[in-house]
Image (cartoon, rainbow, N blue to C red; front, top):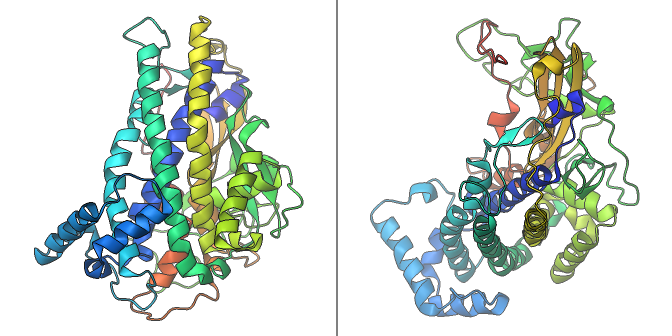
Amino acid sequence: MRAVENALGITIPDNARIIRNLITGIQYVQDHVIHFYHLHALDWVDIVSSLSADPAATSKLAQSISDWPKSSTDYFRGVQNKIKSFVDNGQLGPFANGYWGHPAYKLPPEANLMAVAHYLEALEWQRDVIKIQALLGAKNPHAQTYVVGGMSIPVDKNSQNALNAGSIAFIAGLAQKAKEFVEQVFIPDILAVAPFYLDWAGLGEGVGNFMSFGEFPNDNVTNSDDNFMPKGIILAKDLTTVHKVDHMKIMEYVSHSWYEYAEGDDMAKHPWDGETNYKYSGPKPPYKNLDTDAKYSWLKAPRYDNKPMEVGPLARTLVAYASGHKRIQEVVNMVLGKLNAPPAALFSTLGRIAARGIETLVIAEKLPAWLDQLAENMKKGDTKIHAGEKWDPADWPKEARGYGFHEAPRGALGHWVNIKDQKIENYQCVVPSTWNGSPRDASGQRGPYESALIGTPVADIEQPVEILRTIHSFDPCMACAVHVLDAEGNEVTMVKVV
């Protein structure tokens, strides 16, 4: 949406901006909690070890770190019995393929049992809180109510067929539930687990360059510079200077990617001029053994001013911290203080986990403020949800091009579009996992994943849980990062404006 709005000079209404902030905000909160418990926790938590835990000691541990009501001895005994029944019946499900008993696991059985209990609770919790996304966006994670110029969801405090006072109150209750779980479970769990893995505050550093496109705009300008989570770049881990983001300095290489450029694969192209041409003509994958001196990845290699960039919660948190974001600074300092860790610990695998939790808490706290803004507009009679102007493609200029910045939960997401005769002439997107998972570029510079793995100790090459810890700390989405196209280069889909 933002790329087309930028191309056509459209400014969205206040209500549309607020609803977009709410949709993105609850997606952050739900996505980050799911990542921690369901996609990353089992790299640190030994499920089988929880069977030998003392439920009474687990209860004591849980009550020492939080006021969360589900912390009795009977509660944890019930969770333990549930896990035991899974094991006895051979129905471990998502727990079946873990490296249980691996020497890299360091949590005591009681901490493992507490974590497993919260894993199961988070499954139920996220199902409820994401109803905010369903009400405002119709679908998660790809909301269906976005339209160029605003949103399609109507706003009217007196209408049963629109976003009204009742639905605002319902959403407020869900937002409160989201915040309570983050405050009383998610953050305490991070602070409880981290001390057992403080060596990981010195592992998984990466490239040391961080970029945020900024998100949750405070005004209605496309690609605004005034955002709740600020825009900026940090170079070489220097938190004293935040550099401005210039989208014209973004280029993509395909030197080590299974794509080709007509002018030569060692050149770099700005996304406005980008190509996605698949260099392969056989029925099998284009490799037998990966050769990092040749082409070895389905991902392109985006670079900013010819530098690899890490994007995501850590990048956003560092840019916000260095930009003087008061609440981010307070929570970062609180977390570092409780762990007795220096700021340099953030540049690590453990730092990414901490930053994800910090960001989740700050966004969960902000959701009620955006709801209040929407309610106040409705109270004043402001129900405008769409800009209206330039909606008819017949009114568009003959040629236009634009770009749209967005901070997805996983990091900086950019879209670039060229429009000619009311049709898309060229379109390219550069997504977070392309930045983080990129292969080497023409000069041999590694991307963040590759750089972060250097120096990682691996106790058992057949069970490389240590590798998973660092890669999962980025929360990769390879399906988003790969450009999918017909192997013969044929047109797959055409979208027409009617």
